[in-house]
Amino acid sequence: MIAEARKVAMEPIARLLLTHAHMDHIGSLDGLARALGEPQVAIGKREARLLPKPPAQDRSLDPGEPQCPVKGGFPGAATKPTHLLSDGELYGSLRVVASPGHTPGHLAYLDERDGTLYAGDALVTVGGQVEVIGFGPWFFPMTALATWHKPTALTSARRLAELPIRRYAAGHGRVVEGGPELLLAAIRRAEAKLR
Ligand SMILES: [Zn+2]
Picture 1: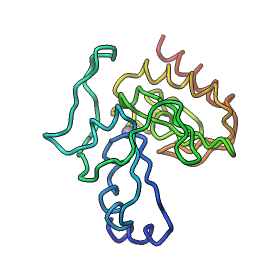
Picture 2: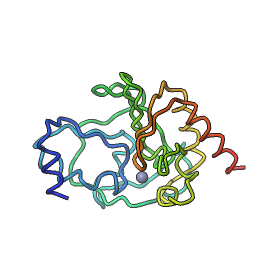
Picture 3: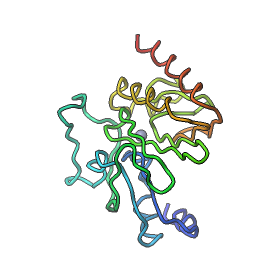
Picture 4: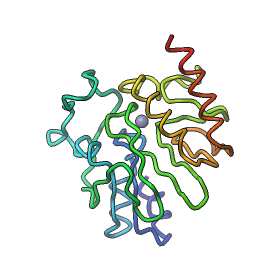
C-alpha cells in the first residue's frame, strides 16, 4: 500500500478529502500523507471524531441523532485532519454536502464546474446503477451491512437529488453519467423497500 501511495504521491497533490472514516476509505491515509509531505487533510467536523485510533476515537452519538451504534470498521488513522468541513462550504473547487446515514458525519462533494458528485458511500453504483446506500444492490451487501441508519441515508439521498448532478462517482462502483433523475429513481426503489 505504501508503494502504491508513493506512485500517487508523484502527482502534485495538495489536498486529501475524506468522505467518512470507514477503513476502506482511510486505509491509505497515513501512507499517502507521509509520502506527500504535508498535504491538507479534510474531513467533516462530525466525522472527525471517528478518525483517530482508539482510545482517542469517539463513537458517541449526539442527542439529535438516531441512537443506534455506528457500524463497520473504524481502525483510525495517525494522520490528523488540517480542515474540518461543514455542510454547504466550498473547499477548493468542491461544494461540501452533509449526507449522514451511512455514518453520522458522512460528506459528499459536488464539483459545481462539471456536476460530478463524489458520493462516497452515500450512494453506491456497483452494477452500473445508482442506488441509495443500504438499499441495494442485493449482490453487494457489504456497504449496506456497514450502514449506520438507513432512513437517515434515504433523507440524505433526497437532499442530494436536489443538486445539479451530471455524473456520479461513488466509493463503490464505476462512474455513472446522468442527472438527478437517476437518483430520484433510486429513492423510489429504496422507499418501496422500506415499506
Ligand atoms: Zn463506508
